Image (tube, rainbow, N blue to C red; front, side):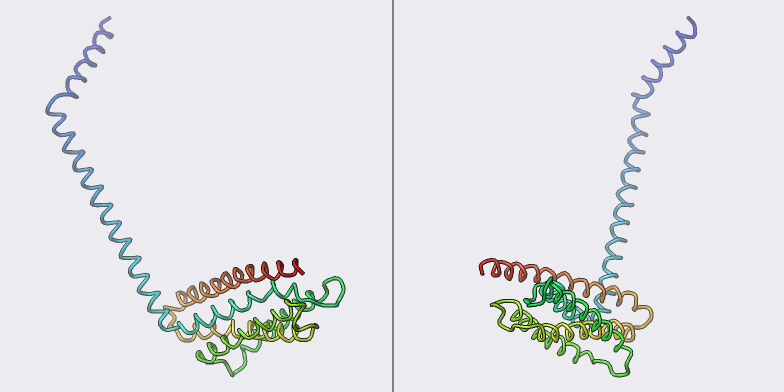
Length: 228
């Protein structure tokens, strides 16, 4: 009985002490201090994060200004390549049986791409301006290959598509590797990693845009073929 009475007294006293003005005053003070400390810590972390993002953007912009021509060059190269290959390459009209023309064209592209990549090791390399000019000139391959597909086709046979694919493959290998090598040589060692990231981003962007446009064109070509 004494033990139970003692526990009851302790509970009553504990309740009274918790609700006393003394405890409320100091508990409120600790809560305010904790809240102010959390707010200051959050503000400090936010400021640090914004500073890090700002510094990162400055670094990327500074590196991009040094290699912007190479970035545009590799974007253009892979945009044109993935616009034509492998989508339009696989639907070229041919008299060959069992779709063998697609197999030949894909094989030719890969061999030409390999040769173009190996040619990057030669002493002569395209300058940045020539890389942009040659990249724009590659756009002529787009209507040429389209004429080998649509309209019956306009350009029948397998010779023209094969020549287009050989040129496309070689220029992809050479003009896709040259900007990567050029960017590494143009930047100091401390900025090469960032330069590689930017070049890779532009390469992937070119692939994505080219593949997206190719889907639209292939859909149109397929619809036209179905109507015929």
